Image (cartoon, rainbow, N blue to C red; front, side, top):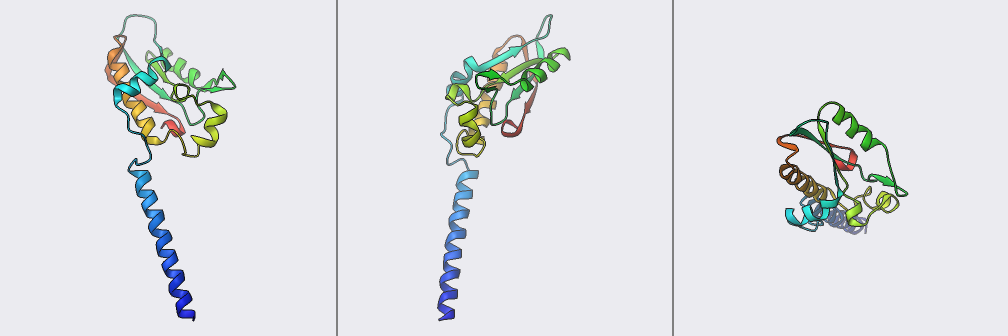
Length: 158
């Protein structure tokens, strides 16, 4: 009797471990991320990239800023941390490119905190696509040097 219980419990634990392993593999391999072409991501982000450049002639070295999981806005008002860092970059002679990954996907602070911050929406693979799309935008902007770009991200944007 004890042997049967032990074998049943062992089988249950093995099945549970296999399921957890399969889920982890699928998560890490990007199975849950909708695949999009870089051109499509460029279109999504097109109106949601803000470029701040120093005075003078460019092209300028660039810092591309990626917000954390809560985004750039709270209750429709901009949070100050990203513009503060962008202004520091501009003061140091860099152009600052602020990428808003949430607004074009109809996500805002209160919907992002329980979904994006918990890994249910806008997973890391999608944000990686945003990074590639932002770099393509840098290459297209004559004010920016595409050969000297720094990526700066916070939490989910890192």
